[in-house]
Length: 381
Ligand code: NZQ
Ligand code: ZN
Image (cartoon, rainbow, N blue to C red; front, side, top):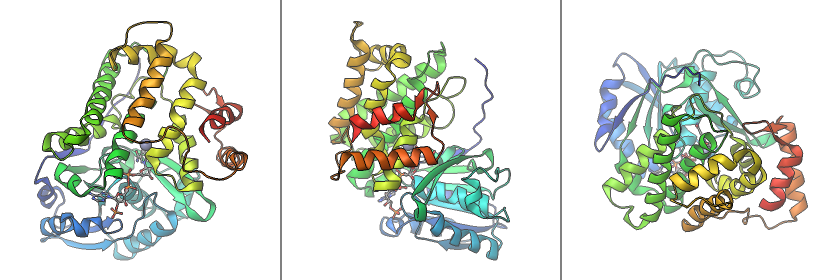
């Protein structure tokens, strides 16, 4: 097991912590506050941020949409350059944070920002980023990844760079009080799949990573089972911290990682507008069954250590059924039920995009070729 691990994001966790940004950003820095469609104006988060920045010089950019588009974000890049801002403060969920990472990187680059997603520009420099998280789900508040969409061509692509790892992130569970139930459920599901993508791979005998991943999965299973307690402070705090830890680099260190459910799910979102988390739940169990020969050992381990199942020849399949049950208990479909058109049209469209995006050998073993993706989609759509 070989790895280098650092996560330097300073986390300010707990009720009332939004005020911490007044000290986290020095007053001689000009701040660009980036946010989404306006939920922060209705739930008091914007007022708390304004109050914390009352001694700072700051400007704002709003309107970053869910699954943020380069078309919108390039306007923020132009603003950041014109106003010569020093720091970006992202106030929102994964979309706003990812969008802010793109803006922070593209503001330090003279070419077209989309080059970053095409791999034509490796991001080594970016404006520093601070975050006020409003939706626990993606872990973007303390990781190096971002996923950006080009609406014109329906491309949804990721990029990673240590330069966009946020300098600090405020995680105040009170912001979750205004979350629609659908988004709260999306958060549970997305965090769950993040852990699975780093855990249900080849056994590496990594006791710390496996044990921690299992603890996080058990948390999410308990929180889903106690969904009627979602208005309780401890429930909210536990979800927020679990979703953060699910994708902050730790459990993925030194182990192989999958991410094929995400790559196929991204195409469902880009083509059909499916919520990110729901695209994952639609693909996940079909993919696990398709890759059973590689995933059997970890599925058996998960069955015993997360779900408390007894060893048996059927254990791996039983674990996949329990994973489906987790989604179903939250009323999240385990197939692409939102789609009402011709099955073959959707499969051909998704396959075309996967091929275009070079998703030719996905998964921890690069074993998910286009043929496998098609087999997976035959069950999903
Ligand atoms: O636009 P606003 O008004 O903020 O409303 C948002 C949006 O409509 C709303 N919302 C957020 N916080 C709220 C709230 N409404 C009421 N009260 C609050 N406190 O929720 C809606 C969805 O927000 P969004 O940011 O899109 O959700 P999420 O956090 O699930 O982010 C999804 C995006 O993250 C990417 C996904 O692909 C998707 O684009 N991901 C990023 C990852 C990363 N950077 O590591 C990993 C993930 O796998 C994922 O791919
Ligand atoms: Zn995700």
